[in-house]
Length: 270
Image 1 (cartoon, one colour):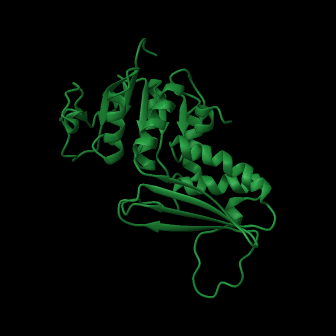
Image 2: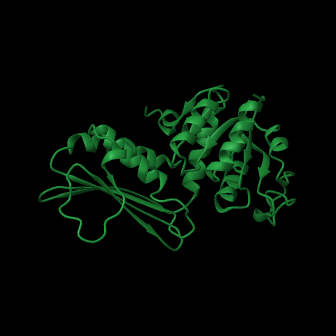
Image 3: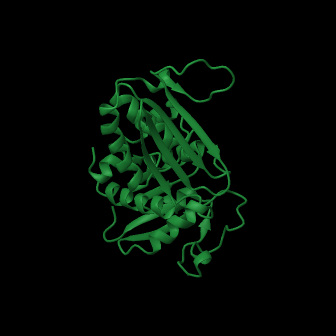
């Protein structure tokens, strides 16, 4: 680790999340932007990473991941599973910590992340929002109390550009609830209903997905009983919440050498 400010590299530098992360890092006195990475063909390649803010940072957007990571203590990655894994392998080689906000990993890919985290610390969470992670803890407690006599449905909504469904956050909510009540989400989840489905199986956890417009991220877990409904919801109005959570994760990782962590570890909720 370097002395002083934690050096941060950001992938997807010209995307919506990438720009939010860059702005957040530039406004954080204890962090320093040292690399802004993007894909081949991006029209912003070669530009200053702070140009969209009217700022000069001295950090040019580049495709040279190895060179960028060689100047960083922590990489923050919100891209796609294949790209994240390629970046993570290089981070493991160079000893760079990684904050992973990417979703949509397969079980095999998660196992690969677990293995690579033994070489350089990784913090992975389907949602970096502090609020969402507090909600996950609330859901654990609620599910235990409402395990009998309540049907459980998870409803999520995101913008039209999101490529995976259900969202990683919705799946994490389902996992937390299922674990709390002694079920296996892989066997009890229902991801779609159409036609004559018959009565609802009370042992299932249902998912409903909405995609449209510029919805940043809405999640609701519904516990529907006889005579009452309990809804635990989180609605994001700005990606700034994900950026600020990511910075908290980067600060946390800066003191860890190896291991796989999640936001419960970062927030002291574990």
